[in-house]
Each structure stands twice: as C-alpha cells, then as structure tokens.
Length: 541
Image 1 (cartoon, rainbow, N blue to C red):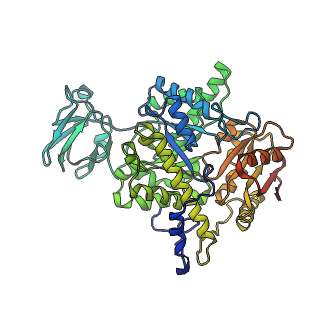
Image 2 (image 1 turned 90 degrees about the horizontal axis):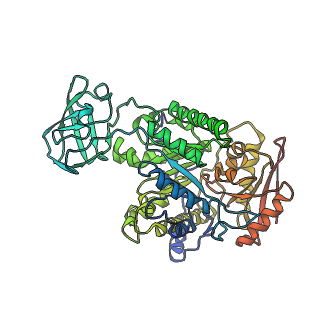
Image 3 (image 1 turned 90 degrees about the vertical axis):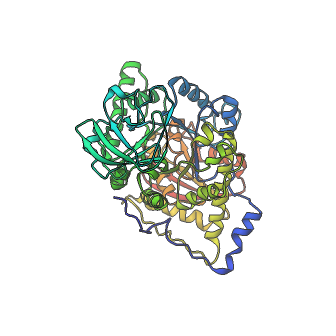
C-alpha cells in the first residue's frame, strides 16, 4: 500500500538553501539559458489527435520536443489510428549513424508510440432523443443495469454499464458522474438491477458519461473486449508500450502481459511477424490501485500518475501528496513514471498557459518525473506544437535551475540512494553518475556501451536503466543495435538512444555523432559492459 507522509529517498527530502544563494533563481528567470535545450533529461509524451495527426503539423509537434507519441483508444478509430501510426513512423528514428536523419531530414532523439487503452470503464447510457438533461439537487434518481434502458435512459432513471453495481454499493455510498460533476448518495439497493439515489447537487448530464465510486472495490476485468481488440491491433502495428487504464491490482498487469504474449505467438505462427513484448505502463487512477500500489509497481514496466480519474476517486486535496509518493517510489525502484492530465490544459484555447500550469510542470520535474504528458493540448487544441514547445522550455529551465542549485553552496540534497541489486553493475552505475556529477562542468554525457548482441528486453532492464535511476545531470547515450531497442528506452529520464549497426568502433562512432550535434569540447564518461556482464568505467574525449 502507498504510504502518505513519508519523505525518504532521493526526491522528497527537504531542500536547505543558505540565504546567500537566493539570487540564483531570479538570475535564471531574467536570463534563461537551458544547458540541454533540445535534449532535456525529462521526456515529453504528447497525445496525437485530430489537431496534430496531419503530417505537416505532426512534424512541428515532433520537432518541438516529443519523445513518446500517445494514441488514445478511448477516442481513436482504427482508421484514425492507422493514419497517426503511418505518419508517426516518419519520426520514429533519431540519433542514427547510418542515415543520420529521420523522414524530414531532422536528427533528433528516437521516439516511441504508446497505445493508451480505454480500459474497463463504467459509464452511463444515452438519453432517448436528447443530448443532455438537467438534474436538480435533492431529487431522487434511480440507477439501473437493465439493458433495455441503455439507449432510453431518462432524468429519473439512468442506465449504468456495471452489472455488479448492486453488490458494490450500499446505503450511504457515493456515486460520481461525469468526472464528479454530479454527486449521488445511495438510499437503497433494490433487487439486483436498481439503486435508489439522492442527487447532492444540480447539473447537466450528457450521454455515455463516466461513473466513479470512490473508495469502493469494483469487480471489473483487466481488459474489456475492446481493449483486447485494440491491443491486438497495436501489436500488429508494432507499438512500443501500452498505457493500461484502470489497473487496480497486480493480476491486471499479468493478464495484459499474458494476452500480449498470446497475440505475439499468434502473429509469429500465422503471419511470420516477429514482435517484441511492449512495455506495460500501469495507470494509477483509483483508490484500489493506491492500496495495491507496491505490488503493481513491482510487476509493471512503468507507472502513469493518471490524475484525471485519480482526483475523482480520492479527496482532491490529497492528489498532490499522492503524486509525490507515487513518483518517489518509482525513483527508488528505478521504474519510469509519467505525470499526466491537464498539465497545460488552457493551451487548448490560449497561446500561453496559466501560472499554476507553469508551476505544475516544473514541480513534476522537481518531484522526479521521467516524463510529463500532454493530452487534449496536443490532440485537439489550437496550439499543439506550441504546447509541446512550452512544456520543453519549462522542463529545460527547471533542469538548469536544479543543476545550479546542486552546485551552489548551502544547498543540500539527499542523494544517498542505495543500490537495488547485489550485482556489481549496479554499483558501477552509481559510480558513473557520481563521476559525471563531480566533473559536471566538463562532462557532456554518459555513454553506455552494452554488448552488441543484447536483446531489446535485456537493454530495457539493464545498464542504461540502472544509470538513469541515479538521475545524472547529463544525458545518458545508450548504444543500441536496433530502433526497437532504442524506443523501449526513451521513457526513462535522461536516456538518449544511439543506433550503431556494427560492433566495431561503437563508442567512437557515437562520439562523432554526438559532437556533430553540438556537444563537442566535452569529456564523456564511458561505461562498457562485455558479453560476460563485466563492467568498466573510463573517461574519454
């Protein structure tokens, strides 16, 4: 279970600043000059939708700094998803010694595709002949699971998709509709299909709106039939990771992974198509998920703080604390974490974000997020590329400030993060980061040279990830043999994959490419690992 209030570990220990160094933030605010403008350490996930799916706009969005391109299958049809994947494939390559550029002649970091499932949601039905109805406070309303009312619900009787509703709620239970816009209190459970409720506030309700039951354990499968069809489609089109919606317990992750294994085997046997297991990123968005968080974290490849539904499920004033604890535990275990939902929400309509949104993105970076995410801002907003560009500027500026603060006299961080395995490579990972931090002014990055024959699975759970866990202040250039191997690594903070197609002179080729992209005049910490797993560290130009 996630325990609130603890502040142990790398990220959350209070920062102590001497009074003599208070001028640093003001100086930066007046003269912003991020150290890694185009290669910021914190990654950006952007949702691709109607506003950004066409190739010219997508080019602008991607070149503004996207690392992971998200397709939301709560809304996308397969025709729309195919258009987006086809266009996205023009931008999935990056640092590449062979061709040196992607489809539009730009050399940037590799980009992954994330399939975000709709999940086993609970929703209302549709009104007969109306798009929405007005509901009055203190009036009585009945919730029913009778399928004859699925498209014929009324202001007095709403259809609910959850068949076990009568087993889950009891008198006094709270039911929320439309992201909490309408609140109901259960009066009586009537048989197996009807629940009498009292409306606690007035409002309008549209068709097919979400239903939440805060604090209650719901009986839903890990995947709906639609999710299974969507995941199968995604594997056929070589997606890199799955954002699994409404994960509530570790067995949900196991079921999704087992289903992926089944589909991958079928594609191999029936179409002779080889696919790699996608990363499973569990979305934490319910009280039950928080209660089972440690077990979910242990079995997942990554975590997303899905603040939309989570803020409905838990008291809203506790959301910030929950976010910090989720991120902290991911940092401690070396699992990547994405902070999502309404980060720059007003940029759907406005060219500039609010002050609160600017601070929200910066605080996520300070908390230790590996990725920050855009949803409607980049999918359907007026400024998709502008939203990404603004997020990149905030991220880069915050990281620059973090680095200056860590060097300033009187600033103390708790960076005593212990190794998480008994393997020597973990200690070498920490040592490499320590060396880069000591020589931060003269070091341009850490180059990770793993065995050329390493598989995508080995690369995504091996040395680059261990180094990323210790959160260096310079990029981690991971040498990979395939694009797929690189795309599996981009979710981690700081990791910039470089494709090397030959086992010979890999480090030299990588250095040449890095320097050609404006990183010359620096030393680099090189971490070599041979086929036997032995690790060594050296410093090179």
